[in-house]
Length: 153
Length: 305
Image 1 (cartoon, rainbow over the protein chains, first blue to last red):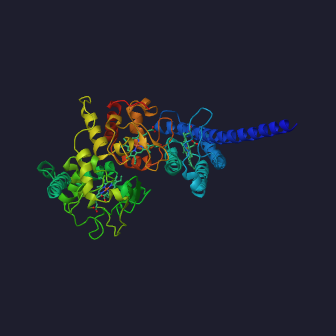
Image 2 (cartoon, chains in turn blue, red):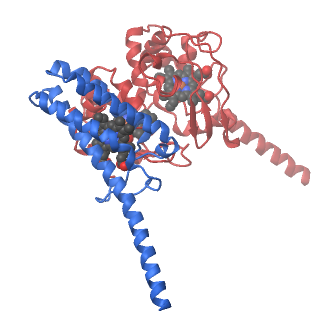
Image 3 (cartoon, helix red, strand yellow):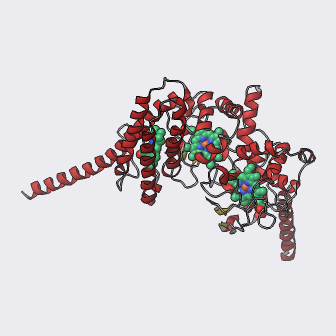
């Protein structure tokens, strides 16, 4: 009986330990997936701006909305303990230690991204000429955040 | 007998000291270096300024736009040798370098020697700037004289005891300071040659992208030129930018030049880390310069990740 209880306790511990590890892997998966979406949205608009793709106002609006949605929940994917680790494809996180040292600054950068994408949606660009400055304002967020809060591994 | 030994020891000591003193004697400008000075053009100098990235270290940390031209110094650079505080190089006569002559400036840039004849530490990347033409140093000087005067005195460096003696830097220089090309046997193409000048010299890309030999304060590991290094903070990697790199190995010349201009990769990921400041400097250069840099990066020996 004792053995079974101990066995069960060990199994339970292992299960929570596993869930814990998987949870952090999930956070890394989620934030990388979120950023891939942002990169894809930026790509669609960037190609229009460069003339590699026809301008489409609906796609622009959808792309900005995608970014805005990511910004709303992006801050949830950085629990303590997820500073290092890999996603399910075995790619290491490129989140910088600075995020956890300065969570306030990081959250502020996310809020700015949320605000700038919302403002961009409100202008609803109708031509490549109108897209340019909007893309500049939204795109500045990428560099500004990656400068401090991201590091290649 | 003992007297004789002491005498021999003294002589040997004196010889060793004399050799150390000779090896570590600060350089003076050569006549070739002198010949290029005196005809600086501030407009051309502005391009040298952005290519050289002076504002990334001598303006406030994270400075953007015109604030990068405010060269009051005071940025702290954390290195394995200790903490360096960048000096004021604005044209202010009291706290900056406004009272310097052009020759003194050129000797700092090309030989790493200060007006009072002592060595600079290589945290000032003169090992790369030494490969510049003195004409370009002259243009740069003419441009820097037009920048805002900032009155600001900075704290001294806080270096570990092994690195406090400036004279000792002279030994390091005999090993690592020269104006020779790093990569030989490149295709004979004026564009690649110009790219080489920008990358190996004024652009000092190797300072971050090439691994160091020992202690982080050693010279380049030339067999791994631009093959990637570690961030000075030790929290990550600086990528390989040779044709063998996993990431940029597949980029075209246009992709590389586009990244330096816009800060976006071909997949629309954005530039990050300390490269942001470098990229924002590069974006000020004409497209031909960025294409030359890219052509050079495609032509150098491949290092695999």
